[in-house]
Length: 502
Image 1: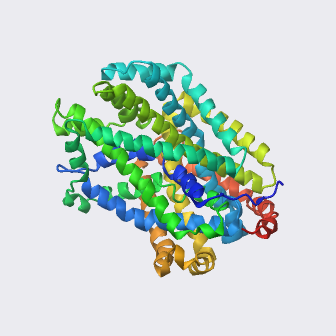
Image 2: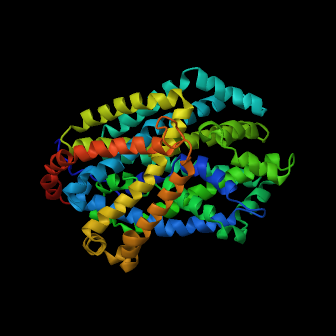
């Protein structure tokens, strides 16, 4: 059947949760979170940032995750069809924009997944670098040799092969990837705790400097980190929600997803803080250790791809630790990449294209449009910033779809099982008022960081406001033009979707 819903469902609640954790747990947890925590630390520690981060888990991520589960289960369609069906046909373009943001991220995310796989292979067969110069040489040789293109192709090909077979294949893949990833992380945490000096780093991670809570950028970075690493508001959980069984509930799933994701971030931070403090703490003062952790590098690669390999080289059984670290990073990136391929493929399926044609098309287009990021790290960094900030718009639009339908109506109609937990009217307020306010504040903040009064109007300069507006504006105008066609085409299959029961 080429319709929007062929009756496929996740076979078990565990399979659903592991698959959604595969969405949430990605490079943002292992790669970005420790660096952001270090950047927002005070003289005594990073604990205040963690407090703000947990607050936004509760008032941004979990409300949006609940919304996505409910919208997907309600519509049994991808993100475009869901907006047409739930928010109204005239707002279909909003769903297309949400889908485009996640798909644009897919283009370069496949490249990053390829980087992780390359470094896993490198750590497996080559000696670890003993200096920053040696580590930088590995990175530069990799980037100059055409390998990023090959590994980008490899990542897209493997992702397409899994998504091609539908939700059962996605479920099987995540039942292997996510438990294995958790085992790797737990082993790494256990090993980190045995290193001399590691507890100083862990103590620093959790020690609060309460004065930082009076600093706006700490709250902004905490909210941004939640928006970027939980998968909330991307449309990915909505897509998987279309395949969930009614009996598997929503409320508990949302909390398990959000808390499970943030737990992985904390464990990754324990590994990074513990390792860096253990290896460098005896060589340099704390301030310099933090500077290493805050180092961004080309396309934010500094800590992960430049510093960590040389730190592993100075540790007992560092080779084993390095292999496991990059294997875990590869698994995290790959599980998220699968969900992005599925989102784009499902949109095409809802437009009447067969799953095989849709998935292969997404793979081909994803590879081709990811080539600039594979070849040019400056382009990747621009795309990461443009569409990463675009996620804030996506979160606001998901909230808007719920507001259009009615938060209470959605809650009472599709979150009715009290045994699964009870959201009450608190969720209505959070998704209807608090989340939109956060989205607007974040968007204004991030756009102000790229605004240069003297240079804002150069649309082809990567760091200007007009560059953001050109890319977002072009996509929005295109989808506004196609709005009626997208709505009608997607809703052609809505009766089929509603006729299939759990």
